Length: 166
Picture 1 (cartoon, one colour):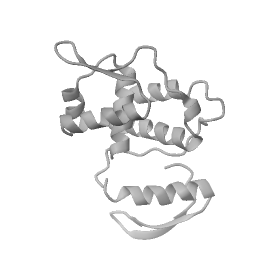
Picture 2 (cartoon, rainbow, N blue to C red):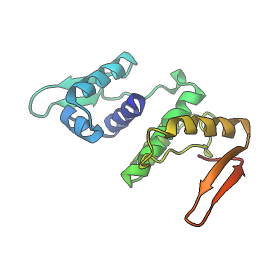
Picture 3 (cartoon, helix red, strand yellow):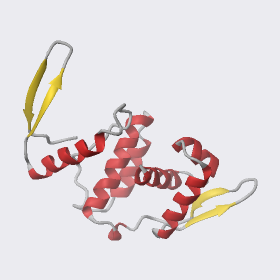
Picture 4 (tube, one colour):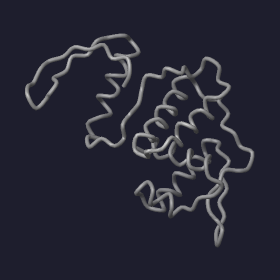
């Protein structure tokens, strides 16, 4: 959950010139102190974040900063882009898709256009999803089939599928 929040905070800071800690705390439903710790984590990761107190103050990324993709491995970039696609599932906008385009611009073959993972964050089953997502992602990457029980109003059946998109 912390990683998703850090990616979310970073995406907001890349889109907006300035944002306050109370705004971030409300958006991510955490305390202001948690946001402060998250900002410290982003700073330790090399993101040049500045903060200003008082009227007109807030949190911002230093002007002219761009994400240096050379420090990101292919799986790391895929994880960031999957997280951003997932945020679109609850935002109802395309603003994260636009941010993804900015992040993936100039990467050449690093980020294929046919990425194979989207996590719908609007799901009710958040606690049981992570292990299932890992299994399905592994099956996609290794081209394996998955067997599961499908429940519908009319019947219950066992299905075997070869996933290609999550």
